[in-house]
Length: 210
Image 1: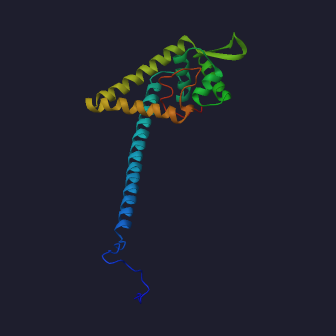
Image 2 (image 1 turned 180 degrees about the vertical axis):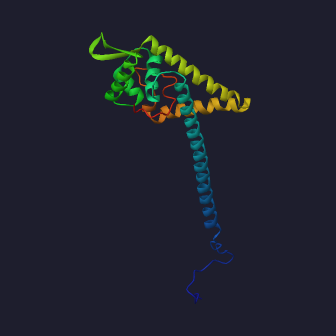
Image 3 (image 1 turned 180 degrees about the horizontal axis):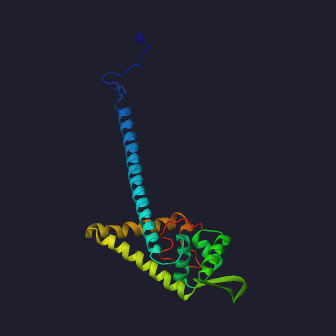
């Protein structure tokens, strides 16, 4: 006899499939919530690291300014960066220094002209290409950069020595990884090919405007 309710027929002994419960949906929601929670935790961690790096950057800038104030020469921090570039790389082209500092050639030229009036730099025509200008430090410029960097290095070292040995050791891989990541993310953060690696130049987050 046909069923009167219109429902599906089942063979004798066959069990009905269990009805779907909200447990599956709840599990999916829990998994989604866990992903969101992990992302939020990552965001909080990244923000904490960002704030710490910014604080360290301000510290380095302050130490650079203090080191610069230790010499009797009216220089700005961006002008000091130009001197350090020349000190590290030796004679370089004006265009290469501008690329390294992240400024236009005209801006770099104005900085060089100011440094020339202080008898800290020397500008000459490139003997291999007379349309190019090659820059280098004078003896006075070399001595000034040595004094400023030695002062800053001593100040940073004094701070580092105040840290426990375990914290000091942890700084090295962390800062090295941060520097490497900067070069991978944006080639403009790395030194120009013509100038090589500029210790004491690219590690300072300074405004390059003169």
